[in-house]
Length: 176
Ligand SMILES: [Zn+2]
Ligand SMILES: [Zn+2]
Image (cartoon, rainbow, N blue to C red; front, side, top):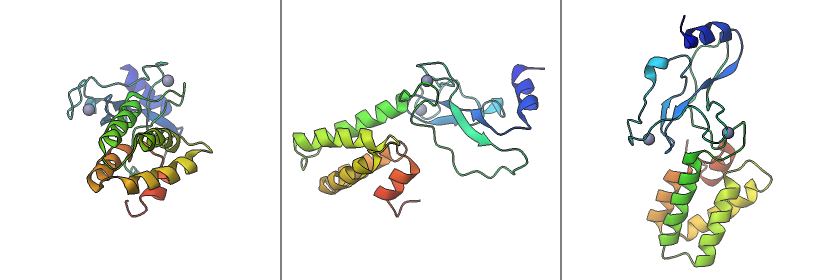
């Protein structure tokens, strides 16, 4: 019996997270490696980078889809986690996304260097589920309103996957 097969059999009766395979840019190759190893991609089909199944910081497996026994498989779409549940470090896609969003903001003609600095802090706050999240969200909304529309949209496309559902709904209530 191969090791994944064994894991499938022993784990079928308890709720657990499957292991996810994600590339450093946050593209999900497989949200249930242990259940569907045939879906694995050594390299990301969207960007060509090597995919990961463990946290580069602590080697804990990346949490994939949540499995609940005897519940039929109709799940909301899976999103790679922003931070490692085991060591708390930001995953590479979180760091890259935040960095790319900051660089975009820095290009925006409507923002002053102080605004860009505030954007950086607000985005970091908004991306973490802490007491400062609401403050980060409020400041982000203000700064997004100040940006050129094109930049604001580009920033949204990047950061939408880095924020928690609560933060996302607060900033873009109309988006599913
Ligand atoms: Zn990729
Ligand atoms: Zn970790």
